[in-house]
Length: 204
Image 1 (tube, rainbow, N blue to C red):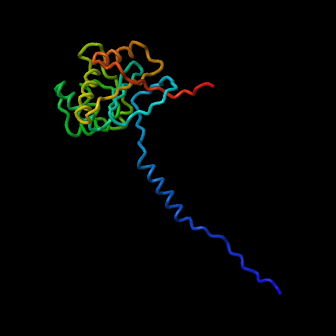
Image 2 (image 1 turned 135 degrees about the vertical axis):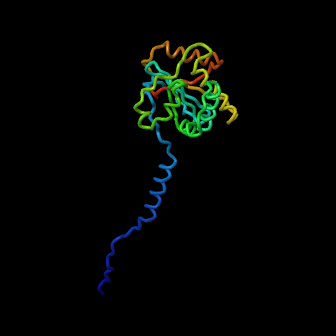
Image 3 (image 1 turned 45 degrees about the vertical axis):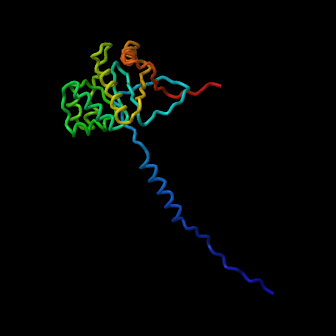
C-alpha cells in the first residue's frame, strides 16, 4: 500500500511580539538614561583601584584643572537655593529665568560678579567661553568657601542631609592649587571628603 505524502509547509514565526519587546526595552533605556553633560574643563584624574559610585543627590564636586576651580552641586532645587543665598550675600538679584538656567547648569567656574553674564549665554556660547574659574584663597572671603557653605546649608534645609564633597583634580595639576581647595574645606571643618579617580586594573 503506497504511503501518503504529507505536504511540506514552510515554518513561519511571528516576530511581532519580539519587536514590541525590543522597542519597549529600547524606549526604557533611552528615557531612563542620564545624559552626560560636557564639563567646562577636562581633568585627567589619577587612577585608583577603589570603586565608589558617585551619588546623584546630596553631593558636590570641586573640579581643579589648569589652575582653575569649578563648582558643581547635585540637584536642581539645591542649585537654586544655593544661588539665592549667594545672591543675598553678594547683593545680586537673580531673576526667576536666571535661576532656572542655573538649575540646569551642572558645573561652572566664574566669579559671582560675572555670573549674570555667564547665565545669559547660549549653550554653544558657554561651551566656547573660557571660564576663568572661581576665586579661591585661604581667607574667610573666598568665593569658593561661600559656594560650599551655601550649598551645604541649602542641602540640609531641603533634604535634611549633610552634603558630601569630592575633589576632582587633574593629575598634572600643581599642588598649591589643590592645597588651597583643601584648606578652604578645612576652614569649614570639612576634613573628610572624596577624591574622584579613574579605575585602575589590579596587576596579578
